[in-house]
Image (tube, rainbow, N blue to C red; front, side, top):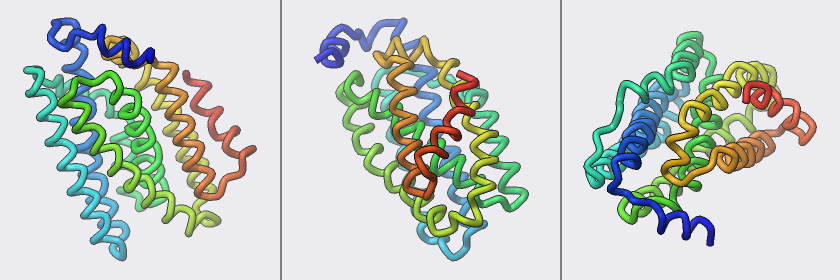
Length: 231
């Protein structure tokens, strides 16, 4: 009820809303573009899964076009420069891991952290989105679970040899998520999304993913602490 009430109070045509939307919309567009590129890179690193990963990459490209249409629908120009800076640290870490052939680190960044981040954000956005964007986002969320599932399945199959690198990659990259959330806290609230709810949803998704891979509850709590220290 609260979310429905919040949506009824939102003026999608106001300059304040459009200003915040220019950054949030740019973030989802840039996120889908980078995911498109990341899955193509993973296809090179995991040639035995090339067809599936190329398929995921194409799906991300379709998502990007959908979110571009959301911006056009509200007559908003996405702030591309802001979005590129927003993802800069994670993007650099993914590229470095890929250059070093660290498939496990790449999968943690793209298939776990970024996908869980996206799922949490989209879940919180759907109830407060304008009708056009809501329909687009609902379709995207269904696809994101497919992307999350690929990383989970591969990492579960290679858990014993991947565990140490997963822990290291988690230490390096999870704190970045909280810095990212802090950067858009005000804009997210303007769109009707609370930071605390985003954090909660992300941690639920991320913890479930770590559990599905093979980490114990105690280990998951320890891994999560690295992110909360930076919150």
